[in-house]
Structures are given as structure tokens and as C-alpha cells.
Length: 174
Image (tube, rainbow, N blue to C red):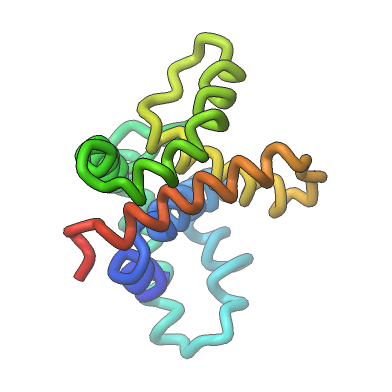
């Protein structure tokens, strides 16, 4: 899991963010019970026992970071949110200087506005947070077997293009 996270972080920072959101929710789904997570999830991974121990340790570390950050019920790891905010700063800079990115964002903007309006006054964060949440929301719908309407699919496609472009331009990738 840690290797997957690192690979995603190095190759596509948008995928890394969504992956880490998923890992946070996985830990919450097991109510921070690392023994249950190890027994019902990690033990079934097709990897060596040594690797299973490393994965379990990684989950324990993540759970500890989540506890320390006070995000047991909801929210995201500060380190991951810093990256989302870095992407937002990159987004704002690219809007001013990159015509290709400007066009990509213009196609996503109506969906961003729709998501903000649908939040009905709840805090949604900046545009890039809306894009990340939209992609993650689609993932959750699919994981739960929910029917996904055409509007959400269109929004997710546009959000994915925004995040893909930002990931390509992200200076923090290795």
C-alpha cells in the first residue's frame, strides 16, 4: 500500500490524493481497529508475510496521523491537504499564463459551479478541492454499486482533465 501510494505520488499527484482519501475512509470503515483491518483486509493480499507486516505498519502509521490530526470522523490528513492547496495555487497561476489549461478549466467550470451550488451553503473549499471531491465521489458511488448519472460522469471527466493537467505540471513530482 505504501509502495502504491509512493508510486502514485511520483506519477500522478491527483491519483495520489484520491488514493489517500480512500485509505483514510478504509481506516474509518474499520473504526481504527488495526487488528480487524489486518485480519479482514491485509491478510488476504497476495503478498509475502513480510510485506503484509509492512502494510499493516503503514496503516497503523496513517491511523496515528489521523488521530493526531483530529480527523477520526471526517477530514483529511494535513499533508495530503497541503498538496491539494499546492495544486490550487498552481491552478490559479496556470489560469493566468497557460491558454491550454485555461480552456480545460473553462470546460470544467460549469460543473464546479454546479457542485458548489448543490452544496447548499456547506463549505466546499476552492475549485481544486471541488474537482478532487467530485472524482472521489464518483469512486465512492462505483464502489457502493450506485447508479451514476450522466451529469456526474461528465463532471468527473472534466475534473479529471483539470487534475491530470495539474498533475503533469506539478513541481513536487519526482
